[in-house]
Image (cartoon, rainbow, N blue to C red; front, side, top):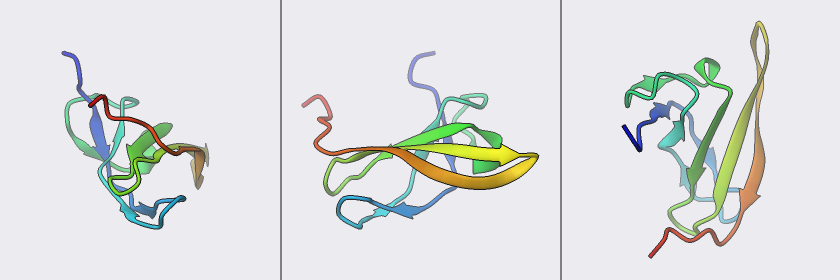
Length: 81
């Protein structure tokens, strides 16, 4: 099925406008619309609803999660409309 993903239980602030980010998505797990923890995936992403900036996150681990880093923050991503 197209468009399947899992929702990652994580919150952050937009690196561009400071709005709260939630509803992160990942395709690194089973992609069954489950809610998963950041430790269960390698990458996840979200678009800020306020300023349309795209945020990519990468999970760094050595047995346990050592950190979560926003690797990309692109402003002005269009939603196709």
